[in-house]
Length: 225
Image 1 (cartoon, rainbow, N blue to C red):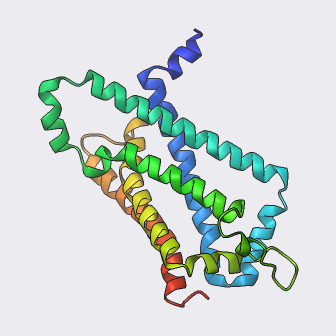
Image 2: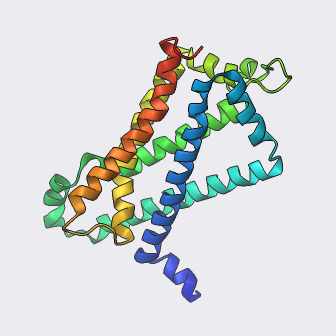
């Protein structure tokens, strides 16, 4: 095994992979949110944004596949680190560690898997048009794929919106610990500023989650229609 391969299979290497992929995923989530918030600007603005993405052609699919690879690398290494941590934990300290750990940190594996499920459903719904295919055929008055109408029609289905709201809350829980964990890995979090970093991480996480949550809520409330 090469030195590089050995590093990436070590505990430190896995933490680096989780931190780097985590940063990339947070950046994507923020950029995706900024794009989605254009839904508030109306059909013309949102469909123009969607048409711009489609104009990237094969490059868009390269980016999507790269995102999936980053996501899988993040989850696989995070789960492996969790297993290694449990295996190395002295039995006598299990209770104390569980009490001290936050609910968000204890549920990282579960919330991560739920977010992955959401990504898959999201791709099947809005990217591939396999879910609600009748909405995928909408065209606007310029002959473009009417993504605005597709998204609004999708969110007008209460069951879908409720599932989306739940999973965005899960994303908020996951990010609330994940952001502060990345800060600790890269050395930004110390004993002196840990509480402040955790507060900042949680604030950013829930700001992102609430941004996404605002979309189906606005559709159901008739603000976006």
